[in-house]
Image (cartoon, rainbow, N blue to C red; front, side):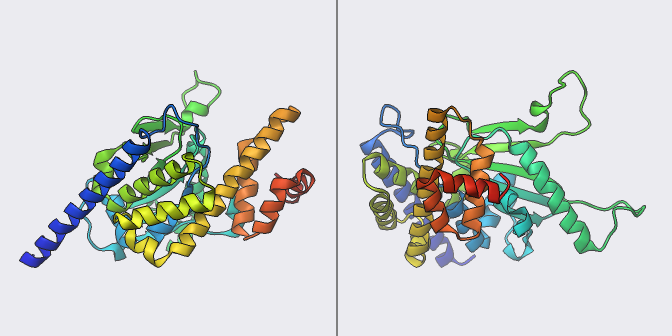
Length: 324
């Protein structure tokens, strides 16, 4: 390696460290990480930005894989992206999926603490394996054993509910007959990526660390009472000025702001539904809400989403339309 390259990498590490210190200082100045004792913030920066960052940058996705597995792969071209995109499976579309070195890696971002992730991953895996077997031109009815990549199911959690740095969620936890030995198990690693958690992991993946910093700063501006657009704009400016996600925010500022505002509206929409459910004594299942939201966003029906927020009859019509 050239001496100049080493110098540049050293400068880059120092710059990232300084940026991290400044973001940490921002949070300590305006409130503790976690915002305990302050007005609880319900707004979440959800999975769209997370997915956008790692879809745009294959090297970052490879770095994330290395950080999780203690590997040192350097060729991002080895990643075979297999993320589910089919409209048929729109409600169950996963965030990021790729095959590398004999592993099938399914990555999900969650801003809600969801204990049903193992069964969701089970559905994802069934679809992924079916696709891979078809691509290999093999048959499930043949006698030859079909080689399958080993699944790695990861949830990156950044919600506001307290959670440990790492938690294992098991499919068997949901089984009713606990005394019966199950012939099926699926384990999901849920990693808390809120800023201040899993520091070693975040240090090994710069994009993941800067994403956590950006989310923390965004939430703090909202907690300070700014409206959504102003809060996110201020957060973008602050992070750019301090070297956090600088290139992405510089090149895709409008797209990022649009994602954040859409997710903010979705969160507001889901809270409104839950509030109406409590007032009317109606329990609205979170899967029903998430399903409708996912479908409308996937079909780019933002006007329908906004109308559904205000019009309960229209919202019920959409539930019936999509059989939710």
